[in-house]
Length: 229
Image (cartoon, rainbow, N blue to C red; front, side, top):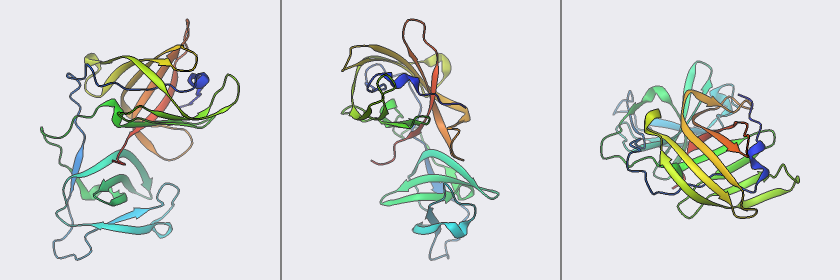
C-alpha cells in the first residue's frame, strides 16, 4: 500500500471522542499462553528487536511469561521471522514479542471495548505518527503545506460514529484543525488483509482513510492498538 500522507497538510488529523460508541462492540483482544510445559521454569520467552531480525540470534530475551499466563494484551502488530509469526504483546511490566503459536485467544464478553482512542496510527513518505488518548491525540510529522515539522499538534473532534454496516471496529470521525479551522473526515476500520505500511515487514490490524477538501482524494495509513497503558 502506498502511504502518501497528504492529509497532514493541517497540523493534526485524528481525534476521537467517546460519544455514540455504544454500538461499537469490538473487544480488546486478550490472550493466554498455551503449549508451554508447566515444568518449564522459564516459561515463554519474550523478545525484542524482532522487527528487522532475520533470525532469533538477532533478538534478545527481555522477559518471560508463565505457562498459564492470562490477560496478555497485543498491539495487533505481527511480523514473520523465518517460518514463525511473532506478535507484539504486553503483560504487566513485560513488553516485547512472542511466537504467536504459543498464544490462544482469551477474549471474553467482559473484556474492555476497543474504542478509537486506543489506536496509534502512522505512515511514511513523509513519516508521521499519531497517538490517541482521552485527553486528546498528539501528532508528529511534516506539514506538507509549508514543510514545517509539527510536534504534539492537536485537533478538535466534531463528531464520531461507529459504522455498524462495516462490523465491529469501524468508526467515522469528523475533525477540525485548531490552527486553521479546516475540516477532515476520517474512516478507521479493521484491516482485512492486514495493513502494510510499505516500509517494513510489519502488518497492522487497522487502517485509516482520510478525506480532506471539497473534492477529496483518499489517503491511507496503518494503525495499531495502544498497549502502553
